[in-house]
Image (spheres, rainbow, N blue to C red):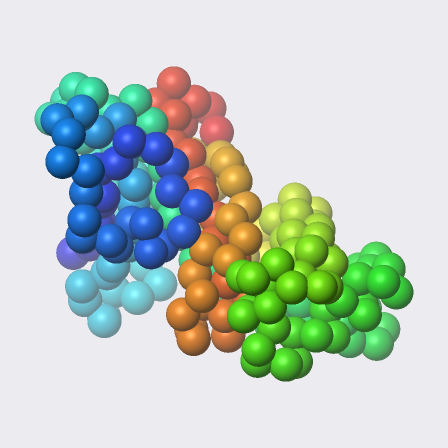
Length: 199
């Protein structure tokens, strides 16, 4: 019903290109990190149906048994509603605290070439990064839906499965879709077997 795509790596990735790159080092060092980068429901009729709180806990346990060198289990997850949320946050009347300097920096997002400047560390790139990452921290740690859950649906899934938010990754997905939906942001959620049930 559901399949999970996993990359076996030696460190937690901060960009999707690293995960999808087919070239791996030729040395024989065993992988230490399992990276869940795609979780897909194969049946359209089952969209929206929960498959329990411990879906990935079972996958983590199975992988830990099969590949003894694995110590770290993380995702590299999209943030599909972040750009829309940023637009609403910048709209007049929003109660989300944004400084005038951050507003000025974020106004550059209207220019589709902003990402080229950001990847080259052009003037103003650090201001955009700082403003977006600050809003991302607010989005994940403070913003809540009307039922007092995280506003991000991917966060709700992983946190509900016992993960913890591990790291926000700047310009982790610079594809057209990644920029349109999340201004390039991706997130690592960590599944620690000792903490999953408590979380």
